[in-house]
Length: 420
Image 1 (cartoon, rainbow, N blue to C red):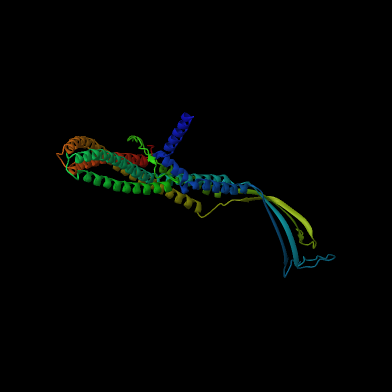
Image 2: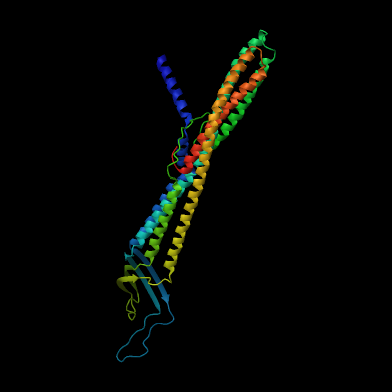
């Protein structure tokens, strides 16, 4: 029974630790899923579905009902009189009720062109949402690596605290037995208090950044979260694959769909119609009685001349295409400049890291000597703390530069549009 209980506790502990870890890619996914802007994709699709249904109704029969009652000051009368014939003029009060049915038979492809233009507009709108969400990756990178750096600094500070605590025990023993000067332990205790202050500062900064990351990702991230240090590689040979490039192409596709729509607007349109009515008079204006009537036929509309309006609209769309090409050119140039900047930063930090390792190696040897000298009363506790702090700062610099290198690589991949 005890074994089972132990296993359950161990399983729950592991589950908690698993939940307390978060990766950079998971943050990207959470932003794409939970950021308020992500809702627009479904809203755009829903709106487009309604628009398409409205457009498709143009192919369905149209049914209209109309009625009127009028009184007019004059009616048609024959200017002559015929022998042996009396023609009664229409009544001045007249009544009509009609039902009209119109059915589109042929519209030159206008309806289909309108549907295609709306579909192209939907794709462009959804891609714009994707672009806006993608641009949030830079904010995610900034917050993620800021928290990671604070996490790394805290780990180093914990190690420094442990080192001081171990040394403090040995120094207190030396002071007690008179081998070390009095108050040597007080110097170390003061340094430990300074470390506690640094813990407070690091923890407050981490909490602040985690709250910002929580708002960005839409997740309630624990303040005790452990961020994974990502292994990021970069490929200098791959091409830029940002969603903005797809957006530029979709915008041009939408313009082409608009061109097709404009061309179809001047196409001939054939429709059938039928009218049934009841009124006084009917179609026979000389019959002063209520009667039913109907008529049916075909109607052709063809806009032959539009004062070059279509031609000018097409020219305007062509200029719009050129503007999009220019925007793409500017985007690619700015992206190339950013990539060059990131490459330079990566190269610089990599060289600094190499020297950081050499400095740490030397500082470790110096601290080992200082530790031995302190225990033997050769140097003061202050001198030892100075060397311990020097080693801590060197290790802190290495951690900082490693995190900065990962940050620079993540920004490089984000700018280029490749995965980490």
